[in-house]
Length: 241
Image (cartoon, rainbow, N blue to C red; front, top):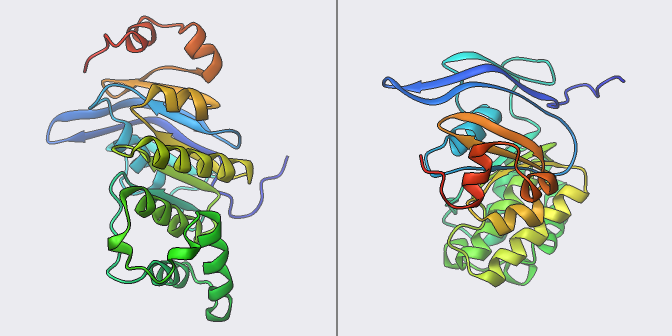
């Protein structure tokens, strides 16, 4: 099957390592990510989840090994977007944050007002369009950050702990958005510390421990009967860094 020109999928890591001042953060990661339901990264704090997301996005390069997007190295992140755990809001209105994102993505000026309205409606912030972005609640800011990421019309969306520190209602709103995004054919790759969230959203699970992928497989099978000792210990709350 021919891949669409400029596709960022599949993303492939080949024996990728990442070291910082002698400390091994990622250690020999080989991985292929293609289209399909959300891939959810889980593992103890410090296991390398955020670093792996940043490498898959292209924000950092492997110390050793290689990463390719659609078979290409050094592919600019035109069809990739990432939302961090604590997104920074620009000191302007909700709608102006989106206008800036659309401008940065090269969307024509005439098309921006309609696209702003579409994105704000998608994330449930249309009524707050004129509100200062920095005055939003934590959950609202995270939804705006998702809208800014979607302004790039990404093929792949990376999310780093998207519901950390949010209350249950805000968490549900974000999870509903992630489902909607995935249903539109966008590949979601996210990390979470919340096993309930992983159960609700994941099509497949990647369990990281000490910078290595120690188990990968369908989410339902993983939660029913993990294949590895690390998986069993993690679900029991006994796997520490």
